[in-house]
Image 1: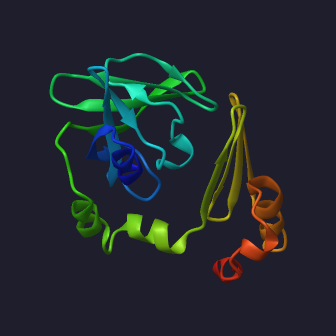
Image 2: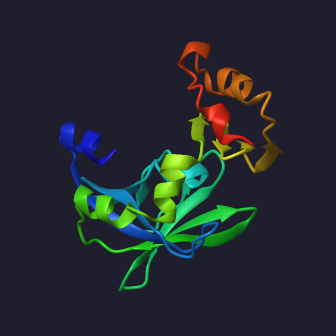
Image 3: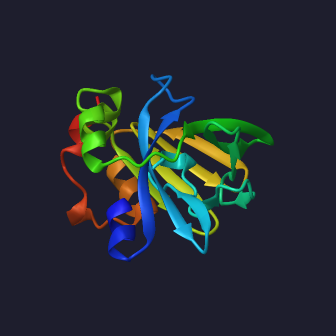
Amino acid sequence: MYLLLLSLNFDVILIASSHVRREGDTTVDHPACLVKIDDCQYLVDVADGYCSSRIPVNLNGDLVEDVNFSYKVANDGHQYTLKIKENDEWKDRYIFNLKPKTIEYFKNEFTGSTTEKIFNEIIFLVNTTTVEKKVIFDKRFICFNGKEKRTTDIDENCFQEIIRTHFGVPENLIPIHFQKLLP
């Protein structure tokens, strides 16, 4: 996203954030973008899994409503916190500051980490429309529709069918090695 925004001439910096809560890790450096538009800074992060907002989140604390969550950024004077509202409860998603990072920083940070395993060993697909979000993460199929969340374990025999029907991927483009990841 960072390189795309740069190529479109946006005033953008890459930042590092630390997740407050994630399965298997208590903190993980996560890249996100800050974009400046008309003297306002927005958090742009489409790579935070099913917690990603499709709508930029203003750093001034404005509330953003999206398909499955509400978002806002809080600032305590020292650091910023992305907050998400799920089931009528606000939770801290990650913390960050405004210090720019480089792509090389993240290459070094992720090598050998749990995050590297997520990108290299776990299946992860997201399909978001204006009314729902569908996610495959590892061996789970998750559907969000408003506040409703349905999670289904994926059976090895229906994995490719789910990718084809729910993510619009033609059969000839579904990697065969995905099946090898399933027991």
